[in-house]
Amino acid sequence: MSTTASATSVTGVGHLLRLVLRRDRVRLPLWLIGFGGSIVASALAVPPLYDTPEKVAGYARTVGTSPVSYLMSGRQAGLDTLGGIVANEISQVAQLGVCLMVVFLVVRHTRAEEESGRAELLRSTVLGRHAATLAGLVYGITAALLLSAITSISMLAADLPVVGSITYGVGLALLGVAYTAVTLVAVQVSTSARGALGIAGAAVAVGYLVRGIGAMQDNALVWLSPFGWAQRMDAFGDEQWWPGLLLLAFTAALLALAARLMAHRDFGGGLLADRPGPARASWQLNTPFGLATRLQRGLLIGWAVGLFLLGVLYGAVIPTVPDLIESNPEMADVVGAFGESAEDALVDAFLAYIFLFMAVIACGFVVSSVLRLRAEEEADRGEVVLSTPVSRTSWMAATTALALVAATKLTVIMGLGLAIGYAIASGEWDQVLPQVAGQLAYLPGTLVVGALAAALFGLLPRATGIAWAAVALIALQVVLGQLLGLPDWVQAISPFWHLAAVPTDDFEVVPYVSLLLITAALVAVGLWGYRRRDAVAD
Image 1 (cartoon, one colour):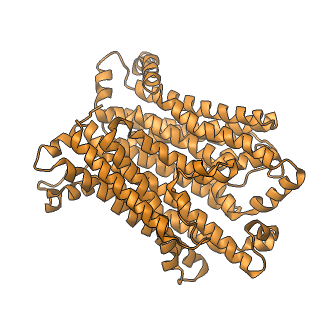
Image 2 (cartoon, one colour):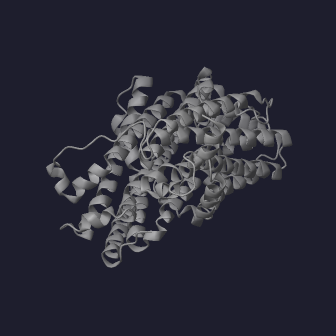
Image 3 (spheres, rainbow, N blue to C red):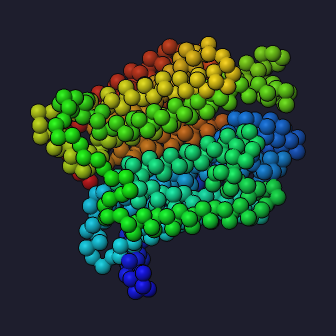
């Protein structure tokens, strides 16, 4: 390709990038405030909790040898230092946060623009073929750099070592840039924004879990994951920069692949082309529920497979938890158990955390499923459905019912995955029903979040983003609530806070039923509001 042709293909990148920043003048700060605020709060809250050498050493002896910690945060260097403790505590939010942020932002301004037709309007002006992709790349890099800068500055504000703080920030930035490149490849492969989000999100999950498994088993698997490369820069430990070169090489290879795919695909198309549907629709599409099911079939299958595999992974870890007692007798004091009962207490505490963690993940599904109503309304497809004998009530009720029923099924699937993983690892198959029942004990919390999304759609369609903010706040409460010492009235905002921590605590009927009644009330409010408001397309 000639130099002139190359220049023409990226014409208008600067103007397009300014447009992107103008459109995301609220969205980008919210991402940075959400994840950055969590990181800052954690970085400043941790040092006062470990203000003596004895407390630091105790953290290294307990958390530093915990398989749960390895799975969730990897093997952080320097756990016998305050910097290593801070890095370990913020790693889940920081690493997953930067990856998810760039995935959503890049897809929004690349594949979603092509799918909506706005990109075609822009290309009818003086805008090069590759300008949108390059603008998305620069935007993703910018977002990753901003979050990494917030992270490093918060560490410096906590009086942590300068070299370690900068090393951690650089590793975080390189990880975000790497998954920006992953997202650009996903954009070329899929023909829809949802498909691109699914592919890139799966890549994030695989990388995170591979690093976790490798860290737990202390083997070479950590070198197969970008998360592992970023962590092996050993911030607050021996600080080594060469693993960052692996991230740069990985990014460069993916960008070259994205450029090649983009050059050989049609505008609006992708490597995975949509298949033509049958000539005649099935009888199931004659009902609102059947249509909603068909529209969300791919979403349901993807979440079911992902959550089942996640359950299997966590279940396989359960038999290793009692080993903590042998390697760390102090862990018995941590959980308040001694002797033989300490092992059971550790397993119960681990299960309670995993049940809750997976229920919070399921909140992401139920919100995205309910808010498919909003997507259909914005694309004017909802009006086409409502132009038939289908009423507003039946259309919204069908989609909401699908989301809540599917969330229930996913909860059972998560419990089955957990039980099967445990049985495979331990050879014991008598825990299937207890572990499925344990996961179901957290179901009302997930359903309340979905019902909140339905109420917002019915009453305040332009404010449905509040539902996603609720998911973020709940995740923050689960991951950092105890660490930050949040008061009870703040933690009580999360519906999960009101449920018994099964199996550590005994199951309680009253809060369980109360949350189910709140779910029904919120759905009823949403239906009432949707019947009375005008359609909102923007």
